[in-house]
Image (cartoon, rainbow, N blue to C red):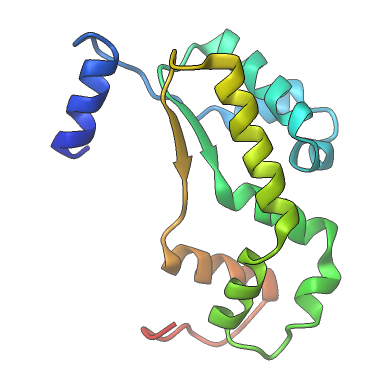
Length: 150
């Protein structure tokens, strides 16, 4: 953890040790009976997230952006099919331009902010471009290797 981030956490928690638990996978198994609803309805996500937070008490709330786009693709497989043969960078640009996952993500962040206020920092986890490309390659079942310019 870099020094600036460490000092930010330290000041947030009055110099006490803080605990950052990424409990989303665990919380889904415990509290989400219908996983597709979790990613498509912000209220369902916030409810599940708050139940897990009450149980595990992480000092940092973390939300992974890629989960929302992965769910969108799962619910809309025809979107990927129309891009067969295109470069992964083109596909990623198109995917990130969709409003639905962005809107749900914004609603989730607003809901968490309304629920917790300044009590906990909220971390938005965004994968590196390379990780996005690897993920897309898996989603599209591409056999070719990604080049360094992708």
